[in-house]
Image (cartoon, rainbow, N blue to C red; front, top):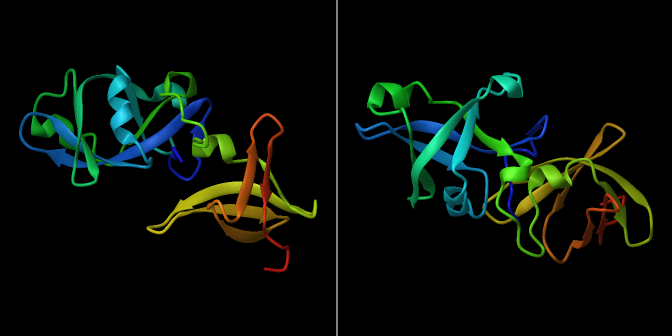
Length: 179
């Protein structure tokens, strides 16, 4: 699954990761990705950076010079960020992009923001709630399903998730309401 954040979408922006630290002396930053395939972000010529509470229109657009994966993180360099002081100023910022500029997903892959808000229905046709977000765990991703204020956590694995119907805005699962 090509995931991002907790399903965060800021008025058409999809949050992809977070700048966790400066890297080296030449302005590079270390980015913790919220995605299975962060190397594909290198194909995006621009990244947007902003704080969680910032309005999307205030996010800063930076031209990406290079991006590489190292030890589970991405190391990125941007035009205009040329030293450690400049890269340290980006620490804690979220990395995002407009949905239309994201790399295409493969068959069976979804951006988390595409799943948030979908109705979850079991094989018996019983509604279980609506996807409120996703959680990344070492074993597998987990759907957070809100059912009138009650939260269900469903593993996002083939044995549970039978079908994702984006046009129909629904996820069919093999799960019972009382589990």
